[in-house]
Image (cartoon, rainbow over all chains, first blue to last red):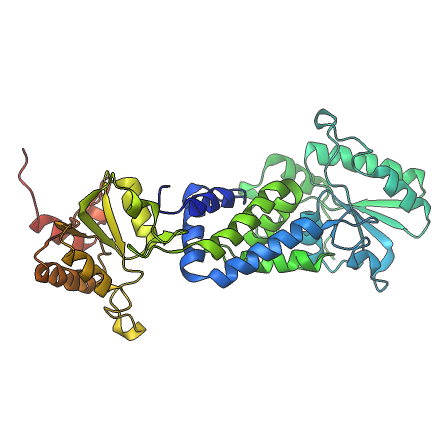
Length: 200
Length: 200
């Protein structure tokens, strides 16, 4: 990109830190905001700066929060007997938006992956064990991803729950809504077949 | 989006000022930078802020520039006898990247569109006329878009060039490289047929 402005070239390069944004889109974005939406760009710059500086992790659930305890953990209206364990803040947001879940969360910030140096300590499992020992949690809902590492993590979490005498549950596997059997992978189909339920 | 952080929700909303970014992508971008690339996000915030504050328009060509005269206009190595007129800075960048053009540019920052209040004055045509009167420019390359308004603008530009005794040229219309005749619109095909060239 060679235009009359070095700052513009730097902006285009910086935009590529966003996922799914390549050279072309970055260029389009830079020109768009400079030509048509400088107010939006100024607001974005401020909020991005503020978010990076001030959003840390909640001390209780490890989710994103700009305060020591996030608003979900601090909300006494939520059911403290349900604790949903997810791998990342984006999974937490997905569960929060899609389901009617009104309990609390615990965010692992990763999944068990010894090769990447992610063990029980990095996933905050000591913090989780302590939380279970508090005695308030009655059900640990394991919502890790259905990948090999996610399953290994789920296994470890169920052990943790057993030790603390807490019931552990796992999200159901099966045919996704709107999916067609023909196009569903064999593993999922076998799982859905094995876990078939009585029609009522 | 309800997570434990209000700043995060604000960031997601602000990201939507970028073209092609809807609610889902904005969420994905926000979580991505916060989880994996805070350094990149910090850099983006700084550069976006700097670009918005400091990039204005070159006094000579009206293209983007953080200095009074942009680096393209200030570059004495470029051919001052060629002046390429484009509608917007993004078109200028496209010509600069795709072609071997080493002359100067003039950016209209719009196209003739009386209904939108864009007349000769808004397009800086007085500035352009003055530039042509300087006598250095020998060829005015009209590179407005091949839309109705772009064509009207091109017509006005050719008049301007005639008055100043400068030769005006227009980008060739025709079949795009890699295009298939079957899928090309009738207008373009008719134009390409009419402007057919002798094979050498």
